[in-house]
Every structure is written in C-alpha cells, then in structure tokens.
Length: 288
View 1 (cartoon, one colour):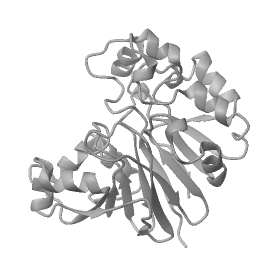
View 2: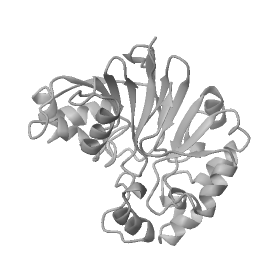
View 3: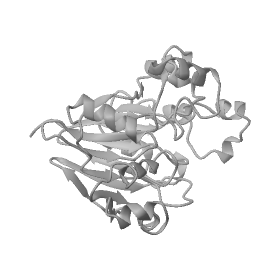
View 4: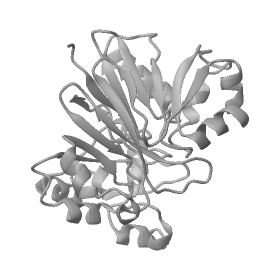
C-alpha cells in the first residue's frame, strides 16, 4: 500500500492570523513576517502516488491552502476527491464557494456533512447554488457513519458539543493504514462531551485538539467572560492529559490570534513543548 499523509493546511481560529481589524503584537508581526502568519484550521488526507487528496473543512483560506498542497505534492490543477465538514462556522465552510460558478466551477465534489449542514447547503443561498449546479454533492453523515475516503483510510464522525446555530458539530477519527488520528478543532468543554477525553486520546496515535485560548487569563484580558467562551483552554487540556503525552502524539491547533503559544519564543510555548505536547504548524505533514 502506498504512503498516506495528513497535511495540515491551517492552524488558526476561524479568522486567521493576522486577525481582521487587529493590530496586537501578534497580528502586526504576522503582517510584517509571513512565516508568523497562520491560516484557518483545516487538514487534508493525501495519497501522493495516486495524486489524490481529501479535504477536511473548506476554510476561507482555501485558495491559498489548495495551492500550497498542490505545489507540495505535484498536483497542480488536481482538485480534492471529496470534502468532509465539521460545522457551519466562519473558518470551516465558506471555502466551498471557490468551487462554484464564479471561480472553479467544480463538478460533483462529494461533500460529507451532518443532517442540518446538508439542509443548509441544499436550501440556503448562496450554498444552494453549489448544490443546484452540481458543483458539490452532499452526502449525510451521522454518529454511526463510516466514510471510506480512499485506499486504506476511513473517517468516522463523532459529535461534539459546540455552538450549533446552523449545524451540528463533528470531530473526526481518521483511521489510516498504520495510525489513527483524532481531530477536534472546536468543542465547548471536555466535560460536556459524552466521550471520555482520556480514553479517546489513549485510543489515538495522534491527536489534533482545540487550542483556541491558552488560559482563562487570556480570555479575561480580552474583556470577555470565560463562562461565555465555548472552548477548553490549553492549560486545562494539558492538566487533563499531562501523563499521556508520552503515549500519544498530542498537537494543539485552532489558535486565536491572542494565544501566546503561537510565539515559539514565549515561555508558555516552551512550557507546552517541555510537557511533551506539540504546537501544530501550517504545512506540517504526518504519516498515517
């Protein structure tokens, strides 16, 4: 069987880094230093020899992300074979519009989504134009779905609690030929998930987990109430999983522009690394 890779297309919270209308130190640095820039969280499963790839989440940065993947693997002009969507928030599905009439004009890209998301894509403009013209073909998924996206790879959705204004929210198990990945870029609280986080992490070989904010203090410094922010903070996740970092490769992703973990020289970023955890980077590749 040929090699299969996970390619990290983006690691930022929905609006990316630099964040719109923000001139904090991180955002100013990202404007001036392209290497500090982060695109919205998204991953792809890639079969380089077969020249095939599958996208998980179509972010607003899809144009740039697609070009990076195609150029890395020598797939210029090769569209994804399929797309799987986590939920209907800014960073996770607007990139679908690039597949439509005004841009690529794709034909029949199979797009896996939950029941509410499928209804949104088929009945609400402008998404309904994509389905009406056949740019995408939406297939409904549920908790028991088993999606065979390519040779040797199965994706299994697991529903997670999150702000579900327009759709349900999914995390995904990605079972490759050799390793099993758990991808959860968005979740409200680990305690609200019906699955035990520690058991899930032990089941996985690799995890990419929600790291929007690093601590409660970060949120308070923004003038926000932690109780109103639907994300677990990194310090809590690290405390829960402190003894599992040597067993499972645990990466953090979906960083807000205020998160000090994105600065490799910040003491907190060093603390994350010293504790055995990893900070995911745009363009990172992992063998599955």
